[in-house]
Image (tube, rainbow, N blue to C red; front, side):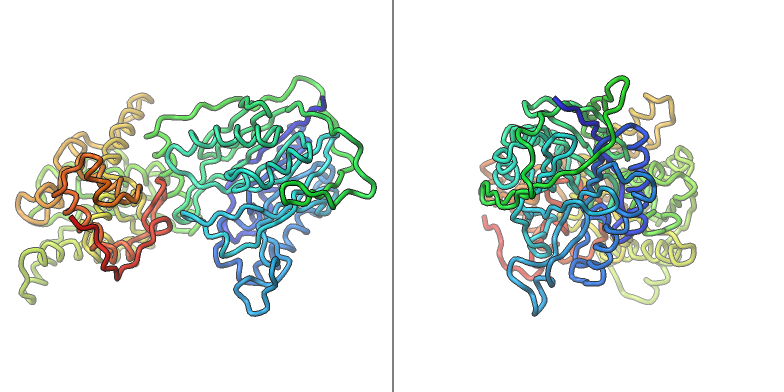
Length: 589
C-alpha cells in the first residue's frame, strides 16, 4: 500500500488579509516541506479568512481572491515548493453574485478549494452542501457545486471536500465511495461550540465508513468577530481508527504518515470527467510528480486528549478576546471592576489573553458600593498585575440629581450610566477597547442598563451562563494552584451573593430567581427553543417559568444593542438567535 505523509496546517487566518494569509500558507508549507510532507492541507477559505459574509457580493473582493490563489501557486513554486501539492480554501466565482440583476442559474460565488502544484491551480472543487442554520448563511452567498474532484496523488485517489460536506450524509462522501478513493480531504472553518469536539470524531468516523476511505480533517483556529475556531484537526482511517489528533485553540502542524490503498486502475486518458455517482459528476485528474517518500522512521502526529469543559471554554474565550483585540488593532482594554464575579472573570480572561500591561481595571464606587467590593476589586488587581484605577462616581451622580428629579430604578440606572460615561471617556482619551461584563443570564432577562453596564465594544462572557461563570472562576483558580501561580480571582468574589449594588442591601435574588433555578429555564427556552409547556413538563415551577419568559421576551430590544462577544454555545444571542423586537407572540400560562 502506498504511504502518503500528510501535513494538516491548523492556522489562524484573518478575514480580508489576502496577502497576510498567503504568507501564512507559504511559511507553513515550508515547515511541512522540511518535515517531508507529500500533501499539505489548509483550512476552508484560507486565503480570504472565514466567514467573509457580504464581502462575497463585492466583485472586487472576489477578483482579488481569484488573483491571489493564482499568485500563491506561482509564489510557492518560486519558493522551491512547487512539487509539493497544497490544498487551500479560497473564494471563487463562475458568474455574477446571485443577488445581482445579471445573475445566472447555477452560477455565482463559490466556496472553493484549490490544489496548487508546479506553479498553477491543478484542480478545483466547489463546496456541495451549503449550511444555512445557526451562524451560517451560505445559501445567501454561494452556489452549490455538483462535481466531486478526485486527484491521483502518489498512486492514491484523493477526493476534495469542504466542511459541511462532512456534516451531511450523501453527496460527496457517497460519491467518493463510488469513485473508489483512498483518501478524502475535508478542509474546514468549523466554529467552536462546547462539546462539539465530542460530536466531531463520531461524525468523521461515520463519513469514513460512508466513503470507505481515510479522512484528513483540517480546521482553522483563531477568533473572527463572535466566532472562535478551535482546530481539533484529525485523521481517521477507513475503519474508524483515530490515527492522530491536533490540540485545540493553537496553531499546529499535524504531520502523519498514512497507509492508503493504491488506485485500482490507471487513470483514463484523457482524464474522465463524465462519470456520475450519487447525482455528482466525478472529475478525475492526475498529478505528475510529488516529493518522494521520506526515508527514516514514520512520522506520527500523536493524539491530543480533549480537556475538561471549563478548560476548553476558558481557552475559547481567551482566544476569541485576544484575536478580536489584536486583529482590530486595539492597543489595550479597559473594564469596570466591581469586585463581583463577572468583572473578575472578564479581567482574568483579559490578562490571560493580552497580559496585565494591556488591561486597565477601574473601580467606580458609589455610596452603595460595599467596602468588601472595593477591597475585592483591589485584591484582583494585585493578583493579576493589571493597571488599577479608582474613579468614585458619587459626585457626578449627585450633580445629575441636583438638576433632575429622579427616584427608584431611574437613580439606579443613572449610576450605571455614569460608570459607562467614565469608561468610554477613558477609551476615547487613551485608546482602550471597553469590555462589558454582562453574562448570558443577565442578557437573557434584561438585567442590565442600556448605555450603562452594557456599554462596551466587546463582551467576552456574552455567551456564558451565570452558573458557568462560577465554574470557570473556580477552575481558573484551581489551574493556577496546579501550576504554582497566584489564583487571579478573589475567593470572596466567588462566594458572595451577586449584587448590582445600586441601592442599599440590593441582591440579584431580590428580582430574579436563584441562578441555579433560572439558568436551566433559560437554557431550555433560549438554547433549546422549548415553549412554556415543555419547560413545565421538564419540572420547572409554572409561575417562575411565566416570569422568566416574560423577562426574556421583553428584553429583545436591549440584546439587539449589546456588544459582540465570543460564541461558545449552540445558540448565542445575535448571530444564532434571531427574533423580532416588535413581537406580540407570548408563551401563555
